[in-house]
Length: 87
Ligand code: FES
Figure 1 (spheres, rainbow, N blue to C red):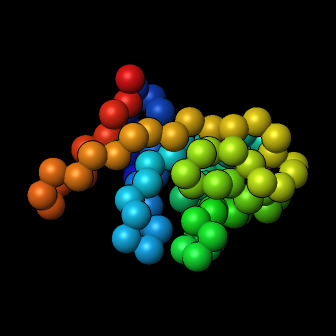
Figure 2 (figure 1 turned 45 degrees about the vertical axis):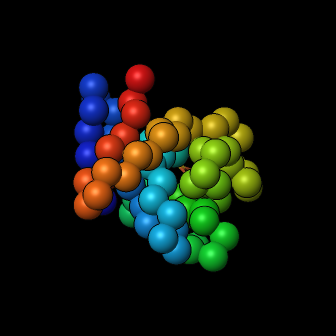
Figure 3 (figure 1 turned 135 degrees about the vertical axis):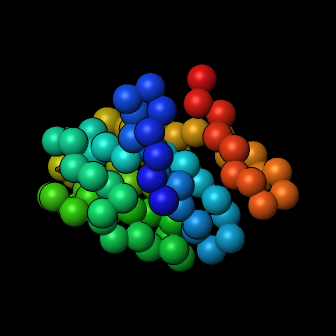
């Protein structure tokens, strides 16, 4: 699932029951990370453009060509509602 807040695209991902939110923009060249491949076991997302792997928990790239982190957002579960802390 993706959403937008203040012109920032955010993706919300279920990593084996752990709900995580990360910026949906690769720090290498603006690839849409939500269109990449999710590895639930490792909790990583592979950028569909050039293949950088990002840790969904930290936003840090694990592999090149990306080397700068993207933003992550704390998630609060309120019953069936997912809330993000975006500021
Ligand atoms: S745009 Fe993501 S690795 Fe290049």
